Every structure is written in C-alpha cells, then in structure tokens.
Length: 99
Image (tube, rainbow, N blue to C red; front, side, top):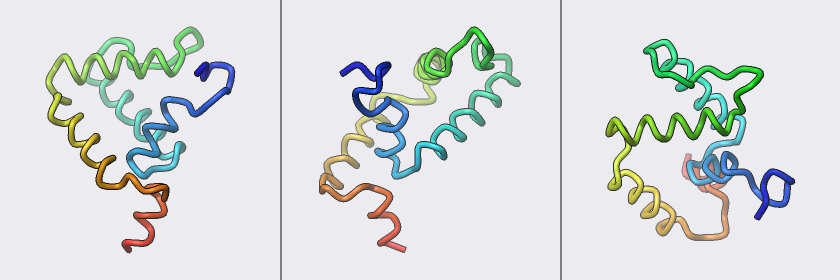
C-alpha cells in the first residue's frame, strides 16, 4: 500500500484509530510530545521546512524505544487491546457508548 499517494490509511490515522482517538487529536499529542522532548534536548524533535512529520515520528519512536519508555510488553498491550476489541465497530464509537 503506497500511503504517500493516498492509496490507504496513513500510519498516523491507523495509530489514532487503534487508540480510539481522532487523527487530529493524535497529531496534537505527537506535536506536544515532540515539543517537550525538543525542550529536553532531544535532537530531531523540532519540525521545519526540511523535516517532514513522518521523519520526526521515526526519530520519536527510535528515542522512546532506545531509552526504554516503550518496551515489547507495552506493544503487546496494543495487540491484546486489538484482540479484545476486534469487532467492526470503530474504537471511538465503543468509547462513546461506554460513557
């Protein structure tokens, strides 16, 4: 699937859906996290004319995995969550229904 040409969901929209968030909320949270890490001195967290958002996300993922903020068991939790909620109903609808 070539997401650069718009032939499918983007990685950001897929991740947002897995969390039950809108893509806009997901992007705001990522921007906030990148800004915070930039202030802490992590290189590559500040976007600009020459750096694409997907490159910043790649650097973010490398940083959180390298420093142990996200571990293999954490990722397994996402898989477990996906299995528990494997219905066709979007996570956002499930969350709204449970309120």
